[in-house]
Length: 245
Image (cartoon, rainbow, N blue to C red; front, side, top):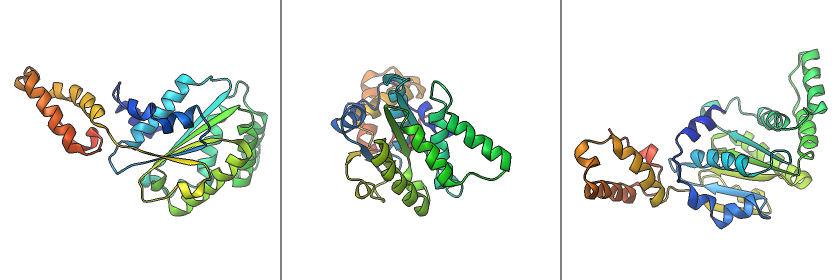
């Protein structure tokens, strides 16, 4: 969860509103769309957007009926991110959201403790399927899917496709356009992620306070700086493009 926390700390209040109010996102969050693929260029703020989605869902959805889980993949950890570890992470998050901790998960843990053997994927999958069916709806956000190994990515998408058929789990995936999530799912919408001009200006309005006094106190110059940078970033997140000092 460290990557989720780090990403959310970079979010500025008032940004990502165009994304959250888009037809594609609302159809996924509140409508019939089962899978939403949010693709964008490197540095476009995909992980920040994913953290905002998780936080927004947790604030808006009833905690007793809706399950919300997230996977924030990292290239540096691709060797440890296997289908077993990712499925176990989903299982762990959802189990802790139940009013009463599921007996099936407790039994699985006790079995692991008793024999000292790592859990098999089949065991995790079986427990997760039962758990998913305990919620009226489950939302899963998978960030930076392209940073997983090709094998893990293929196995995860195949597994989630099967889970959707059994449990109607809703899936939001972020990645670069180098992979094609849409071809794996029958019902998949695409939403481009990019920092729009208004978001950039909101962030710059805060960052500009670090600049010399002659800029901060000159309204015309402040606006010129914001306008020029907003036009130059071309969809990239300001955090990844400029460091104002």
